[in-house]
Image (cartoon, rainbow, N blue to C red):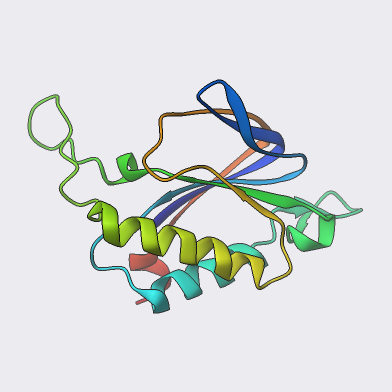
Length: 150
């Protein structure tokens, strides 16, 4: 599982010309699932993200998590996080999870985040989405379950 975490002042996702989800302060998550991911992996990644302290405190130190700043999450499925560009100029996405598996785990991951008391907006798996964000900082963190879960 790969997740790009962006600290945002605001973010939204539009599908077929309609806003499907939007948040103010919080995280925009771009979420990639592989076929080797399972419920244990998504639970560990959700825990890491819920506790990730990248919001500034009164001393301007990154010391607060998303809940402590009353933030929300916009979670977007993103199979392209598994792009392999080693050969040629056209990426291969063979490392991305099969749609049935990835869709199920993506939704389960969002539910794991909600169990932390977080408001989680989401895109639609497999849809053509337009994502807008105002990155705050900018702060962008890349998490890979290979590093976090093993």
